[in-house]
Length: 113
Ligand SMILES: CC(=O)N[C@@H](Cc1ccccc1Cl)C(=O)N1CC[C@@H]2C=C[C@H]3CC[C@@H](C(=O)N4CC[C@@H]5C=C[C@H]6CC[C@@H](C(=O)O)N6C(=O)[C@H]54)N3C(=O)[C@H]21
Image (tube, rainbow, N blue to C red; front, side, top):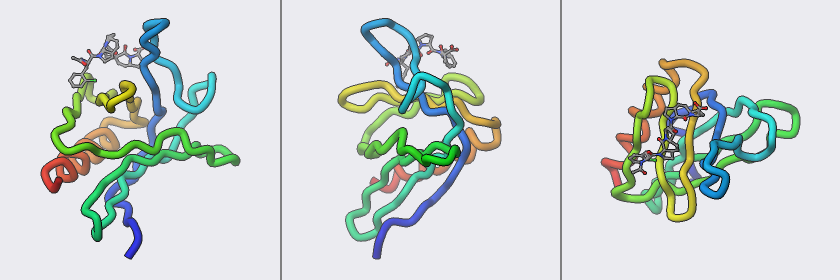
């Protein structure tokens, strides 16, 4: 039994660059809308956030484990962020509806861990 997607949304995936103190688009210099999923592995009961660019190359721009106890910060109605051990991720959602859908799924995932 592989992983199943518990939600998919459109968002620009961003990383906070501590050195230069600015947000940068994940995966390349140009901001690009991606399809972002939360995948669940039932066997291991793990979750991860995976995003691929909508454009032709489908480059993976985020592949980040959801860590038990992680704080998910809804900074604005369409920009949410969280820390992983190495960096801060930000999702600039295409709509507030997508933001709410993702936040609900992320909250469920964190509660299930
Ligand atoms: C205790 C702790 O880690 N605190 C973290 C947050 C956090 C709390 C609890 C758990 C996990 C986390 Cl992650 C923290 O404070 N961090 C995380 C890094 C981020 C960087 C900059 C400053 C600049 C101000 C603010 C910001 O980012 N904000 C405001 C809304 C604004 C919305 C859109 C995004 C889009 C790109 C950029 C922009 O508009 O150009 N941008 C923004 O400019 C966006 N902030 C933060 O937000 C900062």
